Image (cartoon, rainbow, N blue to C red; front, side, top):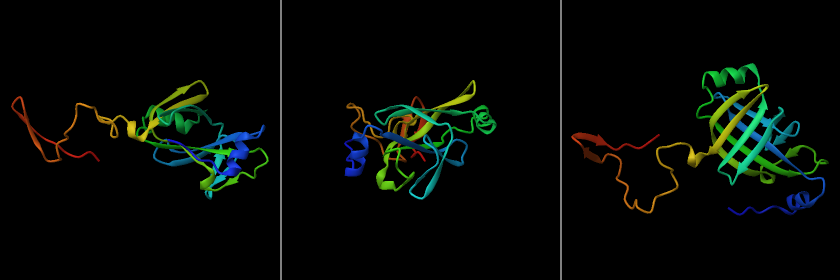
Length: 172
């Protein structure tokens, strides 16, 4: 998917002192938490707080890994599996150190719109794995169809298989 940068963003990317500002909006236990890798940031009038966040390993918008300091709340969430199904959006803002820290949504690039698949506690940090929402572990990928599959039965279709009658339903 090609991305188009504004002239200001392109100037910032080409500058020697450019640093991408990553911000993460996620639900680790059903509550949205707004975190930033580079101090307190305001993006689209939402305040993202600095939290020792490290965004690494974003792979083609398909998966990403986030590490951040462990807190007692996050450790409890990991132990209770409260993070399962939590959403995670990772934005990058091509920024310069002299920028004000206040950005509009048009200045950001959505790097990942994902779902948390794993969350681990290790030492003094937690590590969280995220995959794209279209690859979130459904029984079959939603946007990919096998060449062999040319017909998908409608919901409500009944299938007789080894003496059992199954009715197809929609998910969600």
